[in-house]
Amino acid sequence: MDIPENLKRLLWEYDSDKIDFSDGVPNVVCERVMAHGCWDEMQWLIQVAGLERLRTFLKGRGAKVLNPREVAFWSLVCSVPEGQASVWINAARARQAAWCG
Image (cartoon, rainbow, N blue to C red; front, side):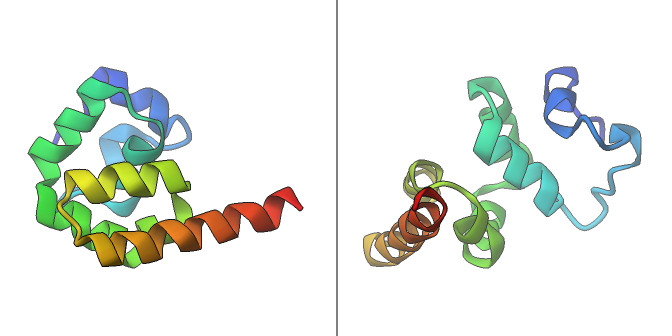
């Protein structure tokens, strides 16, 4: 799969031609676009990965590495039940507070 040129800036330390999409969109691509992508990049991710893949990423890794605002946004986009989204958002807030003192 060819990564759009505008997305390569988010993956600056990787050789984008060697990123393996054979098992779907890799976690690093999901994480970078969810955390730092522009609207066009987010739309590309939704189209290429699909909402189920993005929900799986949120459940497995995204809720642990994204900031609270991003967890809230992507939980809404992916139709994550409100109760589960709240748990993830609160955990992200606690994690962020641990760094702020």
